[in-house]
Image (cartoon, rainbow, N blue to C red; front, side, top):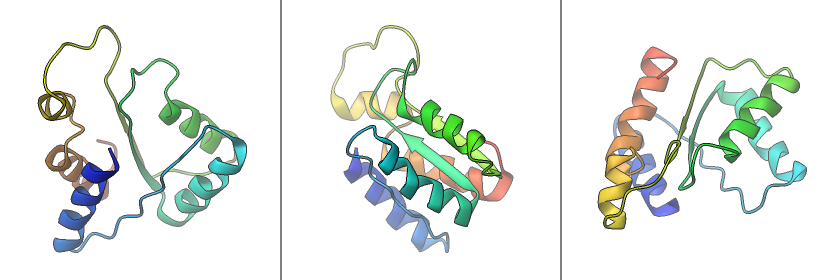
Length: 117
């Protein structure tokens, strides 16, 4: 997943949009501190996860932001959604679910330019 995010970040940089990537290695309260610091600075978040939506980290981050009083200008959680994940190559599944670098680039641009994507 990090490779797709780094590619999307490069594309964003090429159009003048600065993006921070915060990689969360484990679900722990000390990890959320870094994310909350970034949110306070940018007011925006795009969470990309190769997991189903139920119980995803993105939802926990948004809940923590709300509890911490962080005012968001825009947010989007992209994941494998609810239900059964279909079979296919990793590249095709990432594309189908909007987790490939091109899709993440487009989603991030919308967050910056239009607000809630």
